[in-house]
Amino acid sequence: MNQHLQRLQDQLGFAPNILALLLIVATLLHLQKRRPRIATRSWLLALAFLILEQCVWLFIEPIGVAYRVGHTITLECNLGVAVALFFHRGGEARPALARPLLWLNALPAVAMVALYGAGVPLAWPYYVCAVVGAGVALSTFHSRGYGRWTGTLLALCWLSLLLPASTGDLRGVAYRTLGFTYGAAAIDLWRRMYKGSGRLAMCASLAVGVVTFFTHSWVIAHRFYQPLGEEIWTLQRFVLPIGMLIVLLEGEINKSERLALFDMLTGVANRRYFEEKFAVATKHGAASLLLLDLNGFKQVNDTFGHSVGDELLQIIAQRLLPLAADDEVLCRLGGDEFAFLSPRPLDHLREKVRSAVRQPVRLANTQVQVAASIGVATLSTDCTAIQGQDVARSLFHLADSRMYEDKQRLPLSRQSN
Image (cartoon, rainbow, N blue to C red; front, side):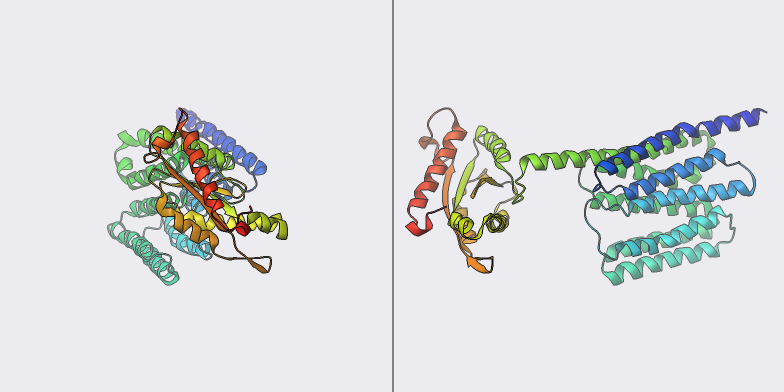
């Protein structure tokens, strides 16, 4: 009777975990419905594996064939979580054949875990899985050029499983397979996902999984630490989906910031971003400003239409963007006016900008050409020419007046905007 009550208590302990995971799944589904472009399918699959694992433990009996089958399912679910995360479409895109390669490399791991779950006592099936896994990793990654070091590292991980298999530590073989898979998933997400707290939480959760799997045999042998291990494993299960939610939140915040601070036509920073950075730069006394205006742009707009003019602005912006160093900013202030902001003098950039702008552009089945009027002002060298307390405004007006003077030196036919 006491054993029955203890078993019932253990089973009920999984119910809150399942409910919490279902709530997270419902949240992701709601977000996906409102934002269809959000890439959450692989995450939902990973959470489905987590929920299935918890449900199996809820109903499984600790003896007999049912336990062995249930244990195998839970191990495969743990493996499925890591494999599903490989298919996340967020961040850096994968090559076209990446998905078939991932499935191909996952099959030996699935077989290895299934062998242990089924209680196969012989070592040679595990040898076969390890050798096949190493061969698949080497052949697929090397032949397709997706990373020789990646294929070699995966092959070494597979071959390292031969040692515990040879000593009869089949539990160690299965759980190290899971550990290697979680480690590979963590490295893959860290490399492909954008920086942020969500990425850190997800990768940290997977890293905890690696440690848990590699220390599983030791924890089983030292029962005193088993409750602690179970608590850590439960925590790991929930840090992962929380990290997913944080990634989505950070993604929406980044999109909102980009809409507010970047020009949607050209992709470069907009006037609001420029004003914020310019105010900070002048406050710290290290600011150099280069203003440029496109001469001949108005004729292009009037002759070919605004769509062609927009395309010209996009091309010009893409030519100018590589000219800005890492600590410099290119902004579109509005219309056909752009600005470079730098902590260093920008006089050296004048001719590079002129050359980039005046290169002919093929638009609307004809060749068009514009020129640039440029004005440069530097706080450290032009401070005597700046009057008044508003240094930022004065520096901007100085660069603007020099740009106007430069425009007056152009031939009359090329002055029109």
